[in-house]
Length: 348
Ligand code: A2P
Image (cartoon, protein in one colour):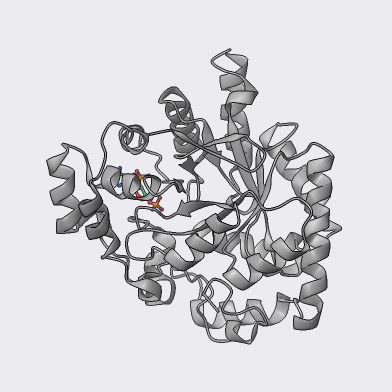
């Protein structure tokens, strides 16, 4: 099986990338990045909002300076934050990401989420994304609603215009050579269709929550039919997540412990995580499992030497729980439902 999928430009994108969400510890992440590059990872996924682009940039720079490989071998993706959702903001935020990453260009620039927020909320949002909610220091219910009401500023009527202008602003970045591809993240079918209908340069990729309990077959089919590759985030179900565990009382599923997964893993002498990832990439999708542990990150890319049978694929497909399986609905909070694009990540 190929280790890459082809994008509409003819460029290759590695099917397994290193996810870096909730990897803020500098020393740990830098060590993990070094281990990942040594283990053969060539795709690293970050985001302005993760607050760790500079660490990614440092590790990549060192790898390049040590002559271990070339920039062209790497596939670096980052994302436009929700505070940068006005066309005029795009050059500034991409510029800031490139400065952080110490790169001239990224390989993929995704719109992080399909809604915008005023910049005033930036500091607060960075705290949230950095995982400081659920620590007990914040009152989730009241704070989120208050944040939302204070800073959300995307108006229903404005949205269509905004999105097509935003699309043009992103296209200009491709023209300027600052990103090779553009794409979206957390978009539903309707939102993606609107981009497709209004674009000159089509989205190369959509990154969505996708794992055994939330397989999103309809959205995936829609993306693939339109030549948009699909990357799975939280492909392992985000075990160990500090943020999701507590936010809104969400229960994290134990996908790695499922008997079906363990049984298949045993059969191939593989680990449960490898079965979960193989199930995703064997469908022609990509995945960005996050790990800062060198052993586990090595496991996660070692998924090309076995193949699940059709029956095993079907068995795993059958574990899909649809929307009930969604783990990350970060704004599943009273008040957010007033947002004109809500529910942005659900099929409409
Ligand atoms: P760690 O970074 O300590 O390895 P997801 O990508 O679905 O969000 O999952 C990330 C979580 O899964 C992290 O807590 C990570 O912990 C853990 N993890 C990553 N790879 C593996 C693996 N191969 N086996 C078990 N847990 C893993």
